[in-house]
Image (cartoon, rainbow, N blue to C red; front, side, top):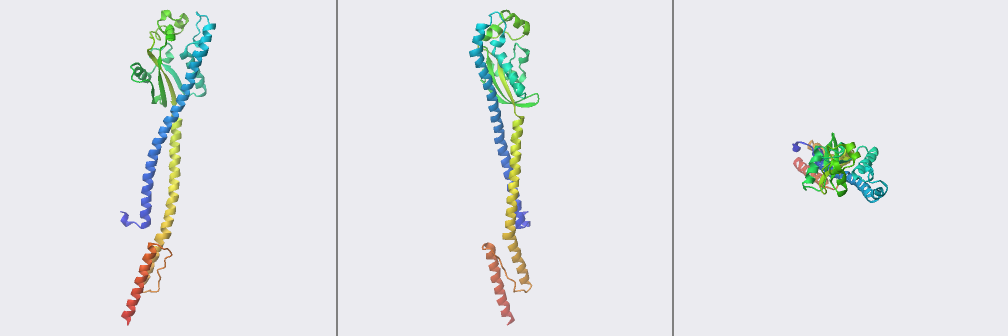
Length: 293
């Protein structure tokens, strides 16, 4: 097919093929890299959120709880002073007032508070943790139609959890009155009773990644068009027009106009071709003079 095209069109077609292949490779490779960047950025945000929660838990354990044990009577029901899950849940709610798209929750198949009941996805992760298959889970998931990057870490029952989660009979009466006896009991020290889940939405990050790909594609296309225009101008001035001139002069000579000159201003192969035609014209002129004699 290319044999039937002019030199100019052949080069344009070849450059177009190069553009299509290069843009496909660039977009595919760039898309993979940018999606990895989405995962990295989402993980950084998740780790930051987790660090805030872990720091709050340490502050509760090291500062607030010892002081509360001194000030709060033993028979008083004040879980906010010592229950880490409750404090972190409330802390997360304050954070969500500023970043409502973020989700932090303690999920359990056997929660004291029904709000912490794990869903099907969370149940699978918690079961794997219970069976020792995984120590932590990270990955992409969907929740109510929204894509999230999520991190889950096991919630292990400690010795300080047993007083509230052993059996209803030994729990504080106000706790039993508030939450009932249907769920949240039977914990054993060392058991994985749930997991801490952090969900960070990736839609905004993904959209930014796609925008980068789009901007790169547009910039690359503009750059290629500029290069294509420059190459086309070079081909026209350095190759096409000199060849057209040689063809025009050859046609004049073929009609008997031996005064036409093969004038080419370049010093390349086109000039060599023009010189060869000029020598052929001189030879033809001498041959015709001999024939006339």
